Image 1: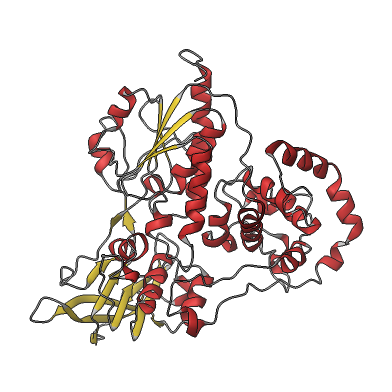
Image 2 (image 1 turned 90 degrees about the vertical axis):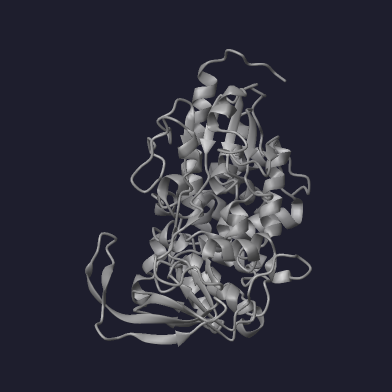
Length: 503
């Protein structure tokens, strides 16, 4: 295979491949033989080494393991994995290309539907999406490791041949504004740029990525990978305007007056939630948003080379049971906490965090205190947190989420020493854009109301998706929203050719 795979050559190879791969591979390896192949383990760095630095935990499959894992795919007549993927990747095709050893062409197939495959291969909860609907999920080996294969092939492309840009439509001359450079905004920008539209992304922070850059630690998602994906968008012609706060620097109406014919709002949910208990204003009590932003985006872990100090803590407690809580407590451990604990009001069964993240945390020495809730934080004479009072809980009947509701055990109060608390109990949409955009309808919890078939808002030509619409959700769900919105925005832009030019 040539080392220079242009988009047109990749398209030719894909077309040739898709003619007969099912017939050839069925004949080569029967399903019974495929089911005998065990799931290939993901190599990891030793826990007692990795919990002291911010290098990546998972090392990725090598080529031999990737091909072996790809051989486990049964080529189902009606593959459930595609239906389980929010962006509808043609999963069987890219996996069969890996099995044949055509890694670069597999990457091209993957990028047809996914603008951020190296990101999704690392942080998406495949176990509850595409892998959950895999036919092999109930077999002894479990589902095909779709996420690990996605990571492998995207890393191969980036580190080997380089990313070949997809074919783009002729320039339309139509302008689109994207507010927020998170996973939803980046996806919309890429999809519209491929369709020939001029796209500008307006981002409040100094780096693009949204939650991918400020929320997810380096040991789960290296920043270099995200930066490479942003660079690919710039190569497609996407313009990024950083340090631009829509709602202050300019409003949505200002952007529309400036000639942007469609606008996508993808500002996420970055407003932290607190429990509203005594002591939350003490020094040493952080929201997870502030704590992770300081460490991840502003590189507080490399102080004083980067002048953004964050208190490391000796006894750190993180309140919550989701992925953000896991990221926070594992970060505290890496910054030197002698004791780092999760305080969660339900049991392990109800934890929303990914199983892999909980497993990694346990390996790294994180303690879990289940059925426990803080009731107040206690400060010293200098206004710094020194302890917290907690209550024991027991599980009652299920609540609206389907999880059993925690109920206080009377007389179970106890006090434990802490000098760092990170509150990771969820976040809400920032109200700035709704407050500065007349006519934009929002729901009870401050999320923007949309038509889910198109992601259109109550305002003409304005669309939205991701956490600003869903509340706290996943990267891949935000990207799925973005693909729906981009298709609708493109239809709107191409429906009326007036004003087009070819510049």
